[in-house]
Amino acid sequence: MVKETVKHLNPYVPEVTLTELKQRYGLDRLVRLSANENAFGTSADVVKALDSWHYADANLYPDSNAEQLRSLISTRFNLNPDNLIFGNGLDELIELLSRVILSPGDEVLEPATTFSEYQLHAQIEGAKLRPIDLDDSGRINLAAFMREVNDKTKLVWICNPNNPTGTFIAPEAIEKFMADLPTTVTVVVDEAYIEFTGEKKASVIQLTKRYPNLVVLRTFSKVYGLANFRIGYAACTGPLIAYLQAARLPYNLSTFAEIAAKAAFSDTDFIDQVVDTVISERKKWEHFLMKSGLLFYDSAANFIFFQVKGGDADGLYEYLLKNGYLVRNGLRAGWLRITIGKPEDNQAVQDLIAAFLTK
Ligand SMILES: Cc1ncc(COP(=O)(O)O)c(C=O)c1O
Image (cartoon, rainbow, N blue to C red; front, top):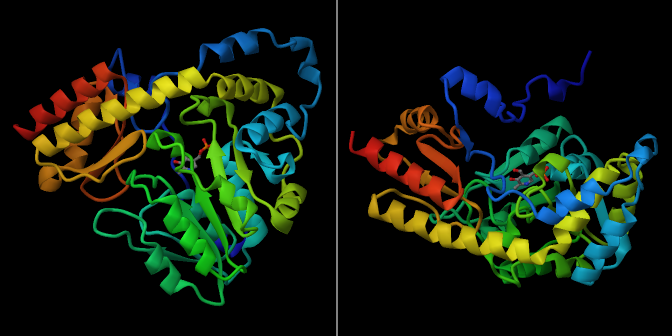
C-alpha cells in the first residue's frame, strides 16, 4: 500500500501543546525551553503590520513568488531575487531538497548528531544516510566529511550552528570544503541559528554566487520569532534553483506570513536586542555549567547542550518539568538541550539544576 521506505520511519516528534502538558502536570505556568523558539517574542511591528491587513482579501490566493519579501531579502544580502526560494518553514525546504536531489541508493552525509529531519527525508527517498562523527568539542568535522565522499554521494548537510550541539564552524572552513568538493555533490548549509553567533561574517550565503552546488537555508522561526507563521528560504544559484521552483507547491507562503516576515525583517533594532540578550545569557549559562562541573559544548546558538552529571537526564528533565520548565530530552543519552530563555527563567532553571544536583 505504501512505499517500502516509509514503513520503518522514525517520524519527527512535534512539541506537545503547553495546554496539554500543564493539565497533565497540574501546572499554572509552564515555560517551553525545548523548541529553540525566540523567548522574547517577535517585533511589535509584526502586530501592527498584521492589524492593517485587508481581511477582505482572504478569498484570494497569496503571491506565489512572495515578491515583496523576496525584494527586501535580496536587497539586504545583495543577491539576485531569482536566487531565493521560500518554503513553509525550513521543514518544507528540507523535504523539497531531498525530494528533488535524492534517488534510491544515493548517499547523504550528515553530522552524527544533528537536526533529525535531514535523516527522515533521506530515508523516505530511499537514500543511504552516512552520519559523520563530530570532533571532541562537538564540532562538525569537514575533513572527516571529505574522506567519506564517493561517487554515490549526492547531498551533504552542514547545520551551522549545529542543532543540538550549538557548535559553530568558520565560514572559511566551509569555503575550503566547497573548493575541494566535486561539483556533483550538493552541500546544504542550514543557517537556522546563524544570527545568534553575533558575527556579521558568519554566514556563507555570499558563496552561493560562486558555487552552484551550495544551498544556504535561513528561517524566520528563530531570531525573528515567527515560528508559528512558517517562513523559511533557501539561497542558491545555477540550475538547481529552477528545479526546486518547478517542484515546490505553488502557494506555500500565505500573505499573512509574508506581511509578518517583512515587518520582522525590517525591525533590525529588535533583532539586535534579541541577539545581545541571548549572547549575554549564553555566557551566564556557560559560567553556571562550568561552575557546576557539567560538560557542555561551546554554543553559538540560542540553546545549550550539556551532559547531566551522573547521567540522569530523564530525572532532571522530569524535575524541571514538574517545576514549570520544559527542556529537550532524548537527543543523546544523558544529555539535555535547553533553549536560552528570558533572564529570570534562565536563573530559575539554573537554581533548579543546582538543587537537583545536590539532592
Ligand atoms: C537546524 C534546524 N533547521 C531547520 C529547522 C526548521 O525550521 P522551520 O521552523 O523554519 O521549519 C529547525 C527547527 O528547529 C532547526 O533546528
